[in-house]
Image (cartoon, rainbow, N blue to C red):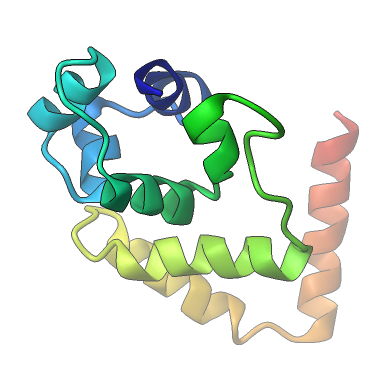
Length: 124
């Protein structure tokens, strides 16, 4: 399981030990020891990893099946918003809040302009 945790942190999320540990509520040193197999993975940590990163418990424990739980678009957006609004210690927290506050003020015609912009970016 320690290899899968390291894989998640480095390959899937490109996070440092400190960033990843902060998201799941443990120190970078504790996370390093888990990844190296020097410390056991607790049930609480498994639950935190699955909840925070939408990882399937069966994959995390056994390496079987899909890595991530499938989510509807609405669930994906809710997950993203939850992370944005709960990461209050981020240096960008105020900026993120301002962006979402301004997005909430947009009219349908404003959203159509953004849609054309995003569609143009996707084509490139």
